[in-house]
Length: 165
Image (tube, rainbow, N blue to C red; front, side):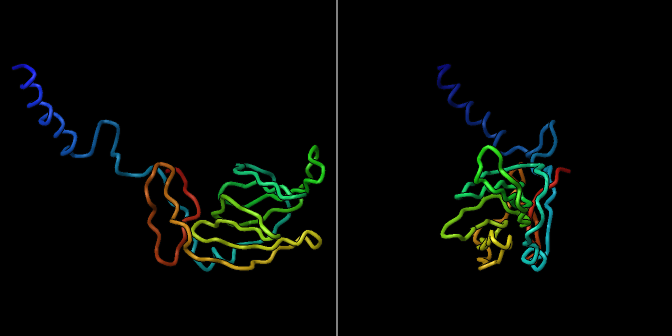
């Protein structure tokens, strides 16, 4: 009889979890603690640039292709190093590409995810220059905040990062 009573009470106890108000004593869980950093699409697309080398402040992924070492500056761009002497990499330049977190290199083309776009660059070491070869728009989903919430961006804006509130 006690087992039957327990089976009858379990659904009643769990309905309070399902139909609760969503709040708790720790704050509203339905609100992000991060604010999106937005950039107009036109500025986003024209922001790709090759700059002089810079200090690394928040590194991400590392990629090595032949004599080049790429170190991601998280959501800012990529540091480029001459890696012909692995014991002493020499800084060459910084590829500014807001919203970027990853790259791949194939056939001397650099493929970079720039937030929602896939950008193809050609880097010419002899002249230390880059050329944007192509841009595939909206290949990747918009960035979500570090705590898992989607940001709100207008149709002509791109989320390139998040700042903690």
